[in-house]
Image 1 (tube, helix red, strand yellow):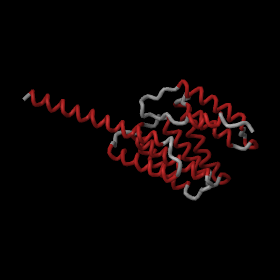
Image 2 (cartoon, helix red, strand yellow):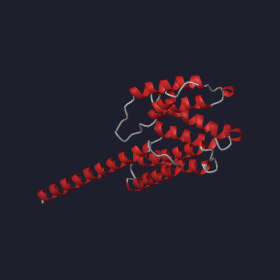
Image 3 (spheres, helix red, strand yellow):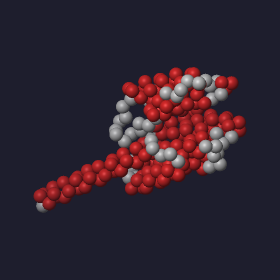
Length: 216
């Protein structure tokens, strides 16, 4: 009897290890696509993929996290193209995924708070004048929480640099100060090590893009 129980235990362990390897493989493939998607439709399809992975791996926070990131990147791309009509819906979908991720990861996850900041910023951009005191304040609050939890996180430095770079000078922004903050972000990227191969590690290419832009 002990022999059969041992065989069953070994077989179960093998299946579990195989399932984990399969999860890590498909997640790595999908995470790589977050850096290559070019259209809102591609980001939406990627968000759907992460949602499906999350429905099967219901104890893991990374699938809903990356689903939220894909939604946010979709929204940021729409915003750059001047399409503001769907930003509220896109931000709401990101927040839905982030609620799931936070339930699994806990309230002290800086990466999730940073995405909450980015989602709030999307909502604010629908009407900055009217929403600065609501969604703008929420974005600032979430960024502050993220920075307090993980001050060495390079993605936090990246988003702070973006805010300064794109904010008009009359409201405290500065292209030159923004570029200096992008350089600080690169320094943090050089020192940063994600906890696992699947943990968030995005943003370096964007910081490098701004630093390498021709001087005007």
